[in-house]
Amino acid sequence: MDHVVYIDAKEGDLEKLLDGKKRMIIRGATGRKLPYGRVEVGDQFYFIQNDGKCLVQASASVSMVINSELLSPDESSQLIEKYQDLLQLSPSQVKRWAGKRYLVLMGIENVKPVKPFSVDRSEYGNMDDWLPVGDIQRVKVNNSKIIIP
Image 1 (cartoon, rainbow, N blue to C red):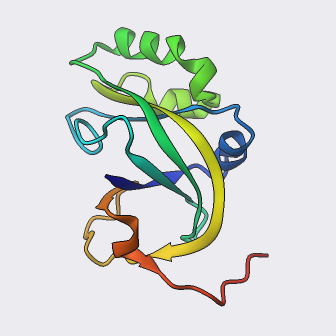
Image 2 (cartoon, rainbow, N blue to C red):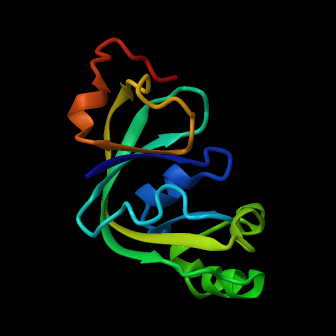
């Protein structure tokens, strides 16, 4: 399964992914929401920065997945701390995810830049930061005239 994953532009997540410092993606919520239970080893991620450009700029494959059970705030913080060397979260990102009752931690490998392209998000009503697209070719938009400043 292919997934479109939004990452934090302000915190430099794309650069951290491409230079190999960041090797794990995290999501969390008070309930079991996407991507909880929907990511498997071997799935492919396509990364879009949350910078308004809406362009996929890199891809990676999933090497491991941890779907937590119900966590206390302390357990949530401890799980993040345990994997911080792979997550490379800034203090504001730690604050965002620590304390969530359910966490999904996804190890990634084979991160590589891709020729930037847009995706058709019309099937996805709620503009979340995670889109399980099935096959990326189904939502890929041909943008042969994209110019990246």
